[in-house]
Length: 308
Image (cartoon, rainbow, N blue to C red; front, side, top):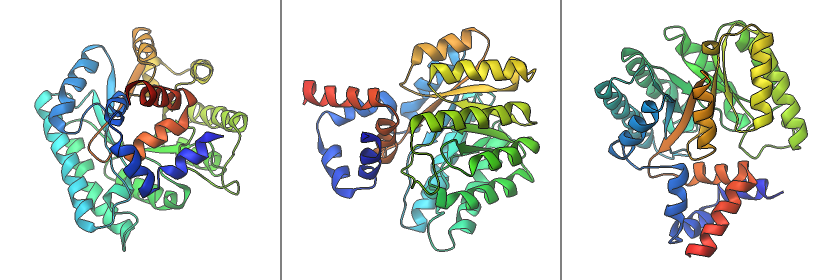
């Protein structure tokens, strides 16, 4: 029941000010967002890749209001590409981007976002890696899919995210599975109305399995974004039934959540990618992590009480 409340708070400037000002907040945020700059994050990248894990990097930020902020987002990702090139880790580390951060919601936003994200995709390809377009709320998805299709004309490895709780996703999955896309499937982490999305957990879980079956039986590369042990087991069984080898799909989980499971899956020979965010504009990302799972919220509240 608290999930929708927390998601609403993620859009509240007043709540942003209150939570950001709490002395304990940064200590808790560091669990999910382990740095603010590229230099901060390099040791994390080196440590995780040394353990046999792969990463997708997210420079946090969204809901920008000025075109120069979109340019700054582009440049932040280009700096990340430069560091990955220096580390020679292009084959282990990809990037995830939110098109809202690249100007999607501004005037002329579709063209602006495409213009800003294209250099990042080009630079990523030059060092042997790729970019995945994160899904945001349902009003942005037609634009995101159109940009995805445009980028794939020259960079077919460009990935995208689909969200199981949306009614439209089963049709999106059939379309994407047929054309060989890289597709990350998640449950969904935005506050969506009942007219467009499942609201109950058991309905979302059932939709997740239906969509995952479509992806596993299709021609694309499925990326299973879930920490749910039952869904992980279901994914392994669906992959087995579809005749997929271990390198023909991957698991993805968030940095700071179930780290022991990351290592277990990698040790079993699975491709295991850790979604790792960094940056100063962490509030929206952090609040969605709290909303996704009650344990995350309990962790935050316990910390507020014990350290505040």
